[in-house]
Image 1 (cartoon, rainbow, N blue to C red):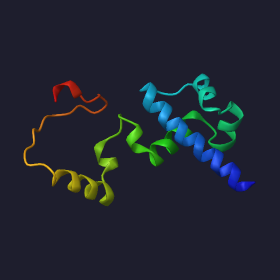
Image 2 (image 1 turned 135 degrees about the vertical axis):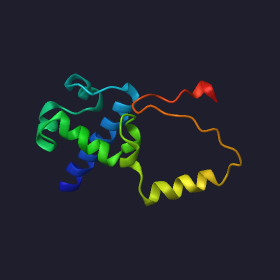
Image 3 (image 1 turned 60 degrees about the vertical axis):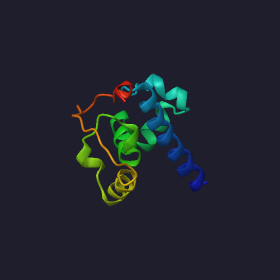
Image 4 (image 1 turned 90 degrees about the vertical axis):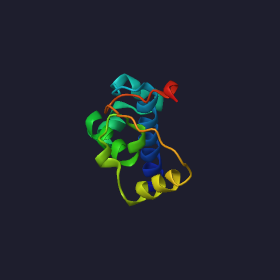
Length: 107
């Protein structure tokens, strides 16, 4: 039973992060019905939207485009980045604005 609860909680957290990424905005209580999360479930597990948002950001940081780069850098991401960088010979470096989408048409 406990594993079922944790599995459901993990699924809601992942679905929340994916919904947040898809909508590209803060989630509202009304949005939770699309991920099969009731207000009671939210309050029971996280107490508030702010808390589920913090939990989702911690677990799925790449689903959020408004986070500081500093908070995503760790040994694993540096290793992944190094592997990608070593595959290329030339780089075009531009500036970025935190919280904005990448202009993929530029490439």
